[in-house]
Length: 610
Image (cartoon, rainbow, N blue to C red; front, top):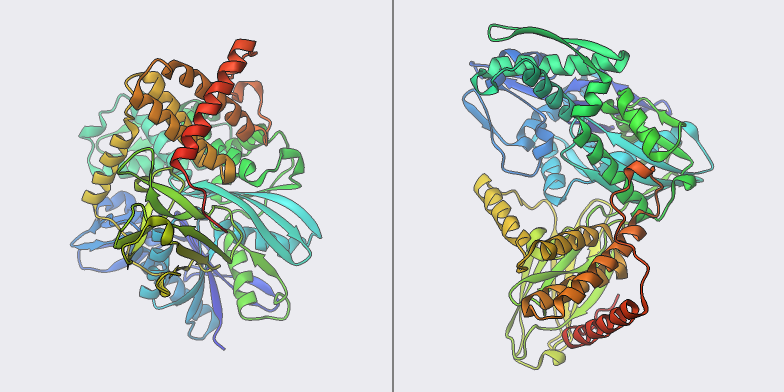
């Protein structure tokens, strides 16, 4: 049997590992190094450079070189390198091809299959694009593993703890994943995942470069691409220097700029405040989803090159109120975990009994007609995010109108209340006989496996018809024009039918909490938001009462979401929503609740079944 290789396809660097001699072993590249920069360059003759050589060309030949393309996996973003044009997955395929050559050189044999890691928060488009990249590079790719899952696998393989609940904070060059992991015996169970696919060490580089140019009073619009490339490279060097010392000199010498300035860690804290704020959000989200407090976490493990920054470690120690944060080989741990996973798939004796359970990072559902807002499809969730895989769920639906002859089943991935805000995965059209809606139940089953393959089955008891669709390896990328059109759509959606700022604030606040919650609480928030929009359209004298009620209600929900992580006083936002109720206010709240329940009963028929 040919060896299976585990690959950490990273934003900044990529590397590979193999299960060999009873352990996960890193594979060196042609330079004898384990880290291969995820950079591709094409010169005027059409010669392709991958890795360290290509990285050197970032500053000298910026128009012929691409990096950080992992952030755009699954999109139709184009990279023009010289005379050639590439998609992000095609650039990734070139990196994977280089790793394949290195692995075959190291092992002395042809290697056909790879297990590739992806950020846990990668959506269906990005995951399928990663699989396609592997296929283009000549790999057989049956298994995609989440990066935090691979890190947990590596940690457990080394530490061999009997029981532990750990937080894996995976902060790489371009993506951030935060996971809660439960380890017991030989089982590694992922409890909850959150993250930010557009946040990483590259953002610190960009902010340092921006700060330097601003302090030097340089007009960026007048700089040529080569100079911008030099500034960014110097910013990265400055960031690395700040990992070792409190202050660092950033020096840029080129035809357009000749300047030096000192930058301190304190400076970075100030001008990168937005980055630290974004780092904290997935932590709060994952702890709320996992229903776990700081005190219940036995280990905090830092993964990814950006975690080597002392400022990142200090920020996490502050937010999590603990100093026992571990940094376990952050550059290599994901690849080592992929190597363990390869050993498991090969059924090697030392690891064949290890079991890794993963979860669904995004919710999956179908679009149903919104009774309160005609014309808009609302998400009806079949499988909620953080559900353990594999999973199969069945719900029963009914046609929207009596005597319909065609039902369109639109399948979505995402957390937003309205289907248009989520990622559409596919459609099924079903012809039905014209009957009363209640006489035409439609049974829909979603089955989602550990490899990210979604199977949709539809049964219609009245006609005994059965339809099936498997969603896998489907090209779901969007053109730049479609992306811009979708952004304009989102902007329109944000403009609620409300006529004043307070109504808009309530809808935005509620929509954010809706995405943070799951289960019955999420359903309740969604229905109360729809009820609020109903009251806004009516625009009668009761609107102010409902506004007040929603402010208090959402404040209580906010408190429930944040109760799983104790933050310092400075970390809390305004909590002035809470006020002692008077008897009159209590009675008013009861009246609004009664009105809401009446409206809910008129607009909803809870016929869904698990």
